Image (cartoon, rainbow, N blue to C red; front, side):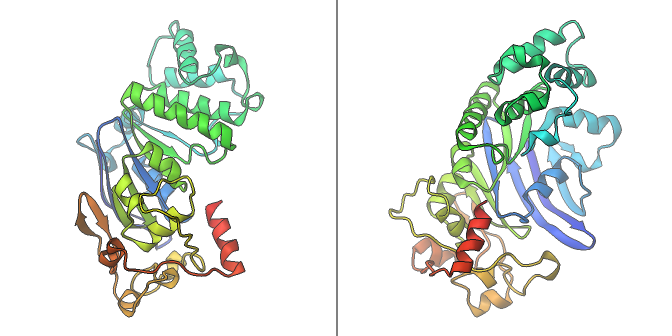
Amino acid sequence: MLDVDDLSVEFAGVTVVDAISLNVPDGPFGVGLVGESGSGKTTIARAILRLVPVSSGRVDFNGVDVLALKGRGLTALRRRMQVVLQDPDGTLDPRQRVGSALAEVLAAHRIVSRAEAPARITSLLTEVGLAPELVDRLPHQLSGGQRQRVSIARALALTPELLILDEPTSALDVSVQAQVLDLIERLRDQHGLAYLLISHNLAVVERLCESITVLYLGRVVESGPTAQVLGRPAHPYTAALRSAVPEVNLSGGARTRIVLPGTPANPADLPSGCSFHPRCPTATDRCRSEVPTLADIGDGRRVACHRSAEMLAGTLELHIKPTVDQLADHREMEE
C-alpha cells in the first residue's frame, strides 16, 4: 500500500531524516516507528502527508506518486490517508462542538448529503465508544480520552485506507491509554485498517504492529517483524529501548536493564562512523570510523551495526553500570 524509498528531509541545511525506506502493506497490518525524541519519527509522518518539504526520495501510495501530487490530487490523497495526532487539543477547534467538527469533515469531502450527516455522525460516535449525546459538547467539556476518540472518529469519517497514528495515547493516563488501544485494535480488525504507528513505547508497538522500524538520529538502525526484532535485537540501541519497557514480552529469560550514557548527538554535528557509537557499550574502533550499512540478515530483517552477528549470537555484554546522571537522562528519554 505505502512504499517509502530513500526519503530524506532537511531543515536549514541539516539532514533530519536520512534515506529512510519502509513499507506498509494492505491491512489489517500495523508498522511501528520507534526511537527517542528527535529521531525523526514525526518528521517522516509529516513528509508522507506532504506537510513538510522532502529533499529527496519517493513516496508511493497504491501506485500514486505522492510527492508529485498537487491541488485536487493532493486533497483526494488526504481523504485516503488520515492522521491521528498525539494531542487532540491541537486538532480540535475549542469553539467548535463535536457534531460540527465531524459535519465539517463530511461536508468538505462530500461523504454524505447534509440530510444524512446526523445519522453518520451518530454512527461514528457510537463506533468509537462515545455517547451520541456528546454531539453538542465543546472539546473542553470532554475528557482527554473522549477528545482522542473524537479525533479518531474524524479520521474514520473519510473511510481511509491508511492511518498515521502519531503517539495517539502518550498524552493520556494509563487507564485511558488501555481503552484507546483496545479501540484501535477493534477498529483495525473491523475496517481492515493499515497504519503507521509512531511511538516511544515498545509495549504498544508489540501489541499493535506486525512490523517495526527503529530510528536513531534520522536513520534506520533496525527493522523487521516485531516479534523477532523485540525478542532478539540485532542492534544495541534496540536492546536498550526494549530493556526500558517492562511490559515487552521477552523470549530470552531475565531482563537486563541497559541505561545508555549521554544523549543523542546534534544532527548538525554528527560524530564520525556510526552515529550511535558515543553511547554504545560495545563500540569498537571500526564503529568510530566507519558508517555501518543497513544490511539484510534474513527473515525480513535489516540492521545497521558492525557487530550484529555477535548481538544475535548473544556474545556481547551490553549491561553497563549507570551513574546518577545517566539514570536521570534515561528517565527523561522514557518520558
